[in-house]
Image (cartoon, rainbow, N blue to C red; front, side, top):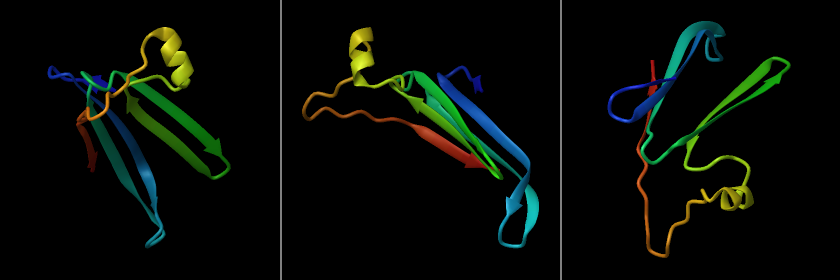
Length: 95
């Protein structure tokens, strides 16, 4: 994970031997996921390792993952008023 000078943070995930189910071969695959840290301040990464199948979750967010009760206790619960809106900028690159 890295940050540039414009409050943009990115995470890059690379797999040099990503399986192709079309022709049963392997090819390199990389993903870059970027977001604005001025409104998505938190970052959660989770993994599920299974037999023959692994999953990685990359989740920028405006809260932690413990639920609204914990956010209220912390004083960090983000609420939108009726009619209020927010815009989030996310970018996904595949290369």
